[in-house]
Length: 257
Image (cartoon, rainbow, N blue to C red; front, side):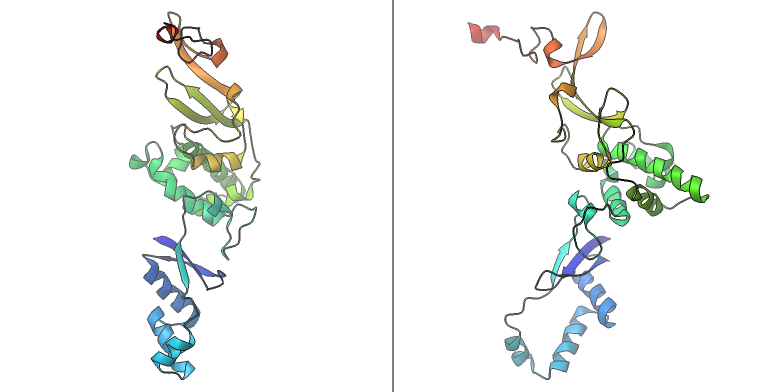
């Protein structure tokens, strides 16, 4: 089911409703606010109560815009901080996080063969930000179990993680690798090889295109794959051999000629 936000002509949020499409969302709004089955019935009742015929009613309301219906983008980072009234704040909301993760889950390594709930228990094998977010949710699940016992729902795991600080960190972060092929990869994980970040950075990292580092990224943390007779190495750009096209000292013989 999609999520739709309904606002009045002044862009004040009237509510959010799960529905198949915009019309279905309006019908859900009518049922929630007036007990009607459809929005058309609600409009008809309003017309009847006004005592005007259809033409007079339309003329009297010619400057009134209809309700505004917009689908909520569950994959958007900014949506995570919008409350149920449509107001943007600084707090992460668990119900938004649950929809965010469900929307991005199809991109997770092994998602086709494993349910989301089972993935929280075993952990993802991937290195994308969404893979790492699932590992954090797994930690939140463990925390919930230790405090409450039993098995939490996915939504309860999201509520638990959302209750942690956005700046929660535990020696995890991002690492950028430029492979010999030239492909650039952003990896998320634990340890000294990673430029440590926080939960907020992980959430934003989920929405970045493949290979794009966060805007706070420092090139000093970028590693370059280099292979020689000794095997595979990861070095900084300035430590690449001069004949490597990625080296700052590389000179193209054809250009010199």
